[in-house]
Image (cartoon, rainbow, N blue to C red):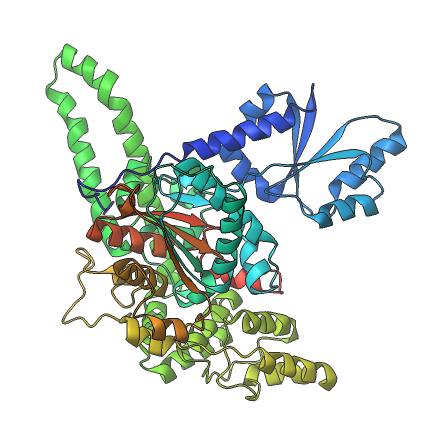
Amino acid sequence: MAFPHRPDAPELPDFSMLKRLARDQLIYLLEQLPGKKDLFIEADLMSPLDRIANVSILKQHEVDKLYKVENKPALSSSLVNADKLAGRTRKYKVIFSPQKFYACEMVLEEEGIYGDVSCDEWAFSLLPLDVDLLSMELPEFFRDYFLEGDQRWINTVAQALHLLSTLYGPFPNCYGIGRCAKMAYELWRNLEEEEDGETKGRRPEIGHIFLLDRDVDFVTALCSQVVYEGLVDDTFRIKCGSVDFGPEVTSSDKSLKVLLNAEDKVFNEIRNEHFSNVFGFLSQKARNLQAQYDRRRGMDIKQMKNFVSQELKGLKQEHRLLSLHIGACESIMKKKTKQDFQELIKTEHALLEGFNIRESTSYIEEHIDRQVSPIESLRLMCLLSITENGDARCSLDTHYGPEHLLTFSNLRRAGLLTEQAPGDTLTAVESKVSKLVTDKAAGKITDAFSSLAKRSNFRAISKKLNLIPRVDGEYDLKVPRDMAYVFSGAYVPLSCRIIEQVLERRSWQGLDEVVRLLNCSDFAFTDMTKEDKASSESLRLILVVFLGGCTFSEISALRFLGREKGYRFIFLTTAVTNSARLMEAMSEVKA
């Protein structure tokens, strides 16, 4: 189900321009140091850089050696000072991406090398991962903003939106929800006003933009994914648009790095499919492929020549991709059978629907006792806590020792573990853990917890927005009827439902109660300009901006909605996320 677009679906803008811009700017910065040069690259930048300018491009611009910088201390200082001691003279340039912060200069100054290096900024903040997906590749945004309250990346978001409106025309209709969304929007608007005239008179290419904070909907991000692309991400980790398939997938002794996007024709047809349909699709594809190979049998020399020159290469490529995705499916099946995925999904669905809470709680307690995976147990606790309004009646075991205290505190502060009522006693696990710390410290922690109590109103929101579909009989996953198919028909992603409702109304009108329950009364906004310049085609293109990360399940759900309603969605996210990444961002216990 590649969701064949309706014949009248609007064309997507060409985002390859963003890559060219980033590449040209990087080359310009490199050429400011003429001659041979060594390039030291922070580990997190390796994959994005490779998508923009690969090694051969860097070599063309006289980059001699490439070094990956693993640890975070100021590498330049040790390098520069070592050169000074050895009496070597070289030129040094530090390039900060996507932007330079004042703190960076402070570090250089403290190391006593501020005068020896020149500093620059590489404003590379938008990486096209696919025809409809742009990523800022800022996984740290989630923790920095939603836990630490650090607002430094908001300016980066505003700059990115400004770049998009400069290249693709103004956005006639803007909607948003969340504190961060509102700040980013206002900052972006200020930038537009300062450079007034740049987009004036331009025809908009994208008719709507929707900004959404991740903490408006944690539930969706905490659920196990069951669409193919989401499962591949949960199982193998898709990084910067590509995945490393190990020997168990490639059925050889080698691992293989595979780019996953619309250019992979096999992947493109199954990426949004519910996993239960994927095997059937792939085996049918294999039969068709075999039939095409078999056509060779009756060919004369001329036909054979044509076949070899025109078709064979394509068939071989398709065959290679097909066997990779079949290998990936088998590997996913093995892993999921081993961890009793069905039982896990059953528990998640019960939590989402609000049934059998006692059984679900026992399942989670048992999960913690078995010490299968602390990250997974934390995720289930958070899901229980948010769906049950903080009423997590879990006598969560002492397996969470004192080393997890800070992680619990983080989950509370971010609103992923919620209180039943302010001033309530600590949950069993925290009181057990607290006894292991001095009373004084435990007291402080208790205060911190109760002062930061956040309520979740998931159950009420779910009823208001009809997130749990009422289905007579079986939900047909082969012919999905709504966005709930991305969670096996059990739940419509809250984030996607909000977007659908606002687009339908072209405003937040009639959604006041939902906005109030989301604790966003001051942070839901709409800004409409006159649409006289916007073509009807552009008004069916919607850019959705996820601040704090977006999951492949949400992307699949909105692609489905687009196909149903004749829209096309474009996604811009600070990074692609999933439940494990959310938990890891909050964890103080390093795996």
